[in-house]
Image (cartoon, rainbow, N blue to C red; front, side, top):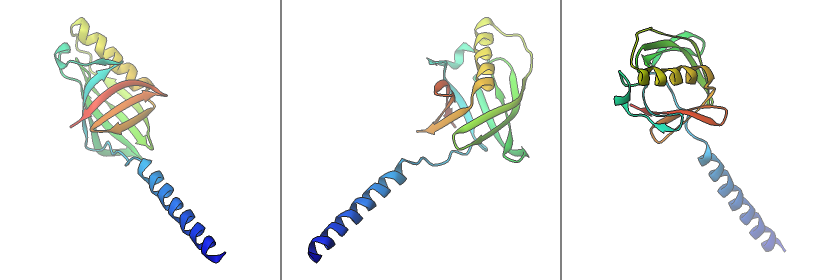
Length: 148
């Protein structure tokens, strides 16, 4: 009887070890935006071609904190310079105090820039994997950026 109990105990211990190691692998490493430069590759489900805008769409995430957990962001939204603040933690993101210069550009650049502005307003989550960051509104993907 004791041998059967020992055998069952070993099996239960091994199963617990297997399940706990699987659970720990599922957890993704935390993505740190600070100091990163992101280049747009997809917007509203469509592949972005940098030649379709006056300037390529690039976002630079500063290491400069303006408040607890709030950092500066700046970059190019296709036609104009963009700048503001962001707070990101645990897969959630919030852009705030976003502003941009007001240079006139071609119709295509203006259309894409409007979509970028809407992304800043509505993005509330992100997922980082395989060198890319996707911004979401809930479960809806808004834009995909490549980390450089």
